[in-house]
Structure formats: structure tokens, C-alpha cells
Amino acid sequence: MKHTLILSLMLVGMTACTAAPTPQTSRPAHWAQSVKADANLHRVDDKLYRSEQPIADDIAAINAAQIRTIVNLRYFNRNRNNDLFAQNPHIRLVNQPLLTWRVRPKDLAAALYQIEQGQKHGAVLVHCYHGADRTGIVIAFYRMIYQNWTLADAKAEMLQGGFGYHSVWKNLENLFTEETLAEVKTELAALRR
Image 1 (cartoon, rainbow, N blue to C red):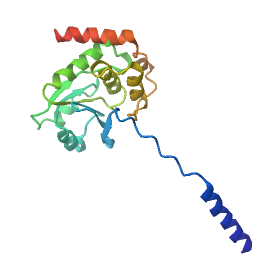
Image 2 (cartoon, one colour; image 1 turned 90 degrees about the vertical axis):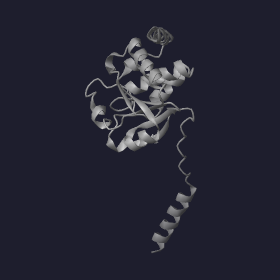
Image 3 (cartoon, rainbow, N blue to C red; image 1 turned 45 degrees about the horizontal axis):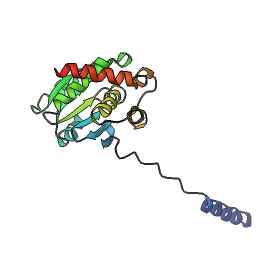
Image 4 (cartoon, rainbow, N blue to C red; image 1 turned 120 degrees about the vertical axis):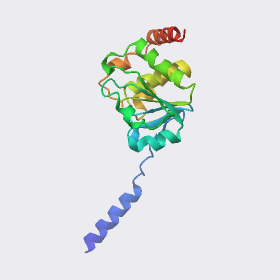
């Protein structure tokens, strides 16, 4: 009994001396902010949102955000949005498929152009299947072109923003160059003519 009491007091004392876990550092305020975590739905700015493939459970959040255009980056099963949003005449659906393993500057420019056109009508949602890789690279180039972010800042948000980026896609990471950025800007300018 005496040993149990001493052991208990020692454990209580040791517990009191341990440091409390440090809280996780919060995300930088300028990174996309979570709107609906289970949909990987984040607000990029007043007129742009990003997510994974929407499902019926996400419609209320999409309507609350007053999204008027949905840009689908999926290559396979790209017509899922048609059934989901068929009853909503206020949402324009745009298919702008990207192949994750072969994203080119002209593909990024085409997606950015669709965002630009959609924003004339209100907020835009960009999504792929997971809302991480294809969506991430498009949002990164949006940040650099429309918000003047640096290559490093845009890449950091894509890789470390908590969107589920899959590190197997090294080709996406390799797009963060001044040359690629210039090519995307040139392609985008051509689309605006």
C-alpha cells in the first residue's frame, strides 16, 4: 500500500512537470480558408472556391457561397456535376479536364480563363476528384497571376495547405518556374483576344 501511494504521487508529480502539448500553428490567414472540411471546400478569395468532387451533401454550402460557375478539372467521370446540379439553373457547369500526369501551360491557361469568365457572373468553384493536385496547381497559378504571389508562396500553399496533395505528382511541383509562369501568361493573353 505504501509503495502504491509513493508510486502514485511520483506519477502525479511527473505528469505535472511535463509540458502541455503545443497547439498546432494556425494556417496563414492569406491561405484558402476551410468552408466545409469533409468536402475539402475552401474559400480562396471572394470570387473563388476550391473543393473535391461535390456530392449532394455539399449543395447547401455551394449555394450559401453563391457560387455561379463550377469548373470541373476531372478527366474521367466528368459529367457527375450534370445530374447533381441539373435542378439549379443559376449554376454554369464547365468541363476543363486536366490530365494530372501531363499538365501543360496551355492547360493551366485554359482553366484560368474559365475561372476569369465565370467570375463575371459571380463566385466560381474549381474542383477535381480530391481537390488537391489538379485543383492545387490551378489555384497556385491563379495566386501567382491574379494575386501576385511568389512562386514559393503559391507552391507552399499547394503542398502544405492541408488539401491532401499527393507527392507522387512531382511533375506538378516542377511547374513552379518563371518560364512556366511566363508561358501560362502568354497562353492566357492569347485566349483573351
